[in-house]
Image 1: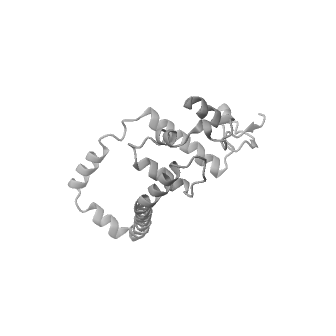
Image 2: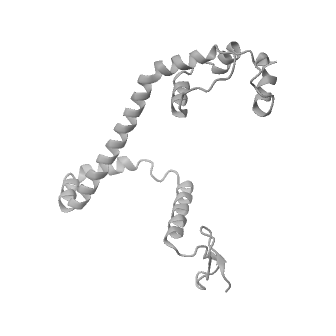
Image 3: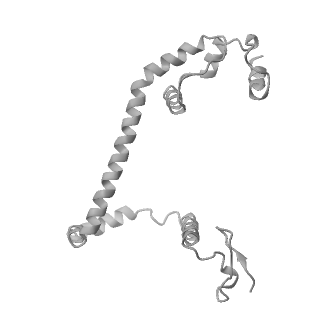
Length: 176
């Protein structure tokens, strides 16, 4: 047999003669993990209904074995500790995400005021907003047609600072 190129890391390897043409990866842990993930995804695509109703079967089984979870936790304290740490991390991430969202929502009036202040200008101006702030602002104001407001407030044809190239050329053509 001659050498083959690994499907994932693209290094050459000598395939096992027993496996033959099916041998597609070199055998490194990262390539094995990637192949496993790909095979699992393919299996889930082929069997989409496998887990439907699983919760009800589990709940029924737990009802018929009421002391199982308590006994399992008593017998596996390392699992309980690992789960406790993981839950703390999940809670911390959720709180942090909520804190960031709340902070940005509190700043919305200021951000809106800054944005509306720029719309009356007759030339392009750098807005002192970060991408996250502007994305949040525009996503929380679905009724606001930003392009229409900009078109009304800026006379694009008379704006000498806009170059008539690329994207702006397309905008100028739309404005005519």
